Length: 66
Image (cartoon, rainbow, N blue to C red; front, side):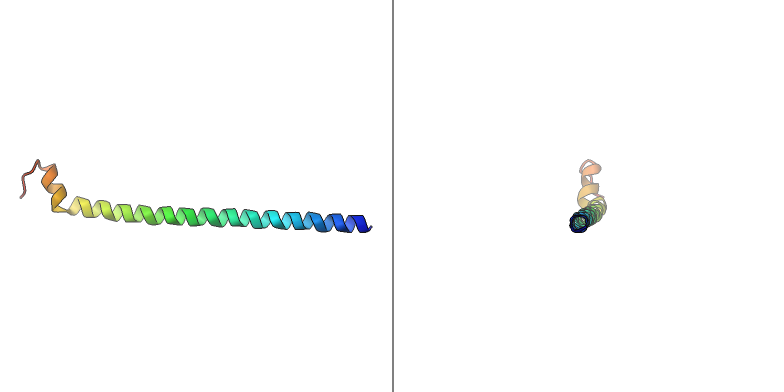
């Protein structure tokens, strides 16, 4: 019947919208985790730089610079 056909079409549209929303959520999550990994990599680099710096060794040795 016409009613059934319209109902099925509406149901399909709703399902499609839901799928698109889910995809969007997943993509946003992926982007966020990529950003976080980038920041972590940056912080790790920074940490290495600090640990290798004279400034760090100077202060950890109680101001005795070698």
